[in-house]
Length: 167
Image 1: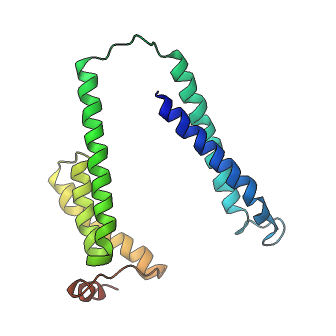
Image 2 (image 1 turned 45 degrees about the vertical axis):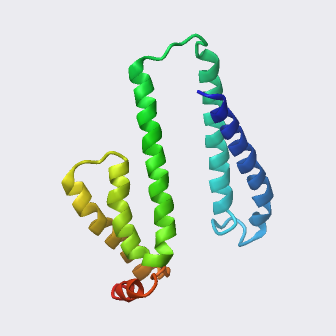
């Protein structure tokens, strides 16, 4: 484990703990004993603080056990480089998706994003690359736009007309 991971997990513990403490005021909302809008944020923040603390302790333990003179093999160096490229491509895909949603609409942006992101992660099966955009986009639109009626960005111009065909 690197020192940066330890610092990150410590910041997460501090953030979630502070938010949990600040969120204790939410308990007064709703009826006593009812699991409602005042309790769910506390459960989520408390769990996040505990999981972050567990990761912090784990990373500190691994850092202390790590040998300082540990030489890395060429395979390990190549694997780290491959992982960095994968993460970089994933972030670029996600940022392009976020930028594209207001312009081309949610449906088309999601339909394009899913296979591109899968390729960035290393997926090579054509069946997955061809079926997943249709299936996942349809499920997301059905659940959020139809059942829960959350409005999605429709896009601009011809893309807005295309989006209106679906919702």
